[in-house]
Length: 325
Image (tube, rainbow, N blue to C red):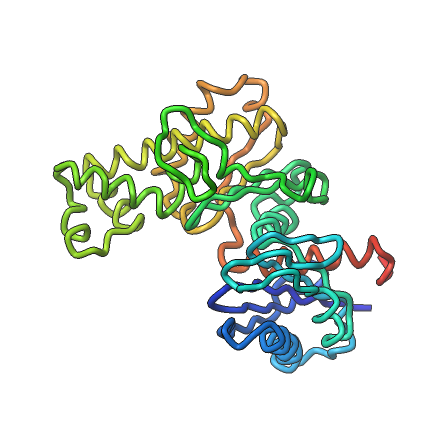
């Protein structure tokens, strides 16, 4: 019998829900504003309504739904199905699995949004077929997760993967976590923009000065200036890739992954960052690891969280005996 899952990517601004089949193909997708200020119950009701809407949109029998998965930004207890804390949502100790499950009538499984994205890439994206997939997302910050033979690696307290908060020698920028020189203070959209702003404040000449003086400077401007041969932009992207390479050197030596997948908006920088990453890894990692390692840009882009959440829901439902394998 054909079965379907729904994956939900819950953000502070928008909710994206997708109907996914057993081959992890996205059949239908809907997007709605989260409206956090209207409260937890409102958001849960909205997600439940979106699940129903998907089946109407796709023309699929709602009774074929076996499970719902949701990726939520913040600290998540995936065993209890509780959102412990999510600052963007203003949620604390919300029993999402229990409350949403009662509304949709099928088991609901939740996890951190980055873990869900990496799980999606491992099961259906750039990491498909690899045994050990280490995924990194570069956005406002930097986060990571690891999938080992189809299972997420959590570590104690579900805290494994906080690569963004590994302090890098030589970096001195204070991080919001309380440490200094964390990887994400450099390797992130905000980190790239910060490097440019600080250099311009010190008098460096660059094509970036115009957006800087307008108060509009972003990481995208740095990539654009790089492509025009701007010296400062090239320095920044090269340094960012080198720092990422140093951070990944720790992951590679500890995890010995088959595949590293780079996702998030920052991954769109492509070879501007990836070449210095590879060059740095050759200096910091024993060649035996690199010979069996492939590094790829993520394939699922905006749909990774939705597909990953759906795949996670299917995996968890099968393991707990909610559905037949």
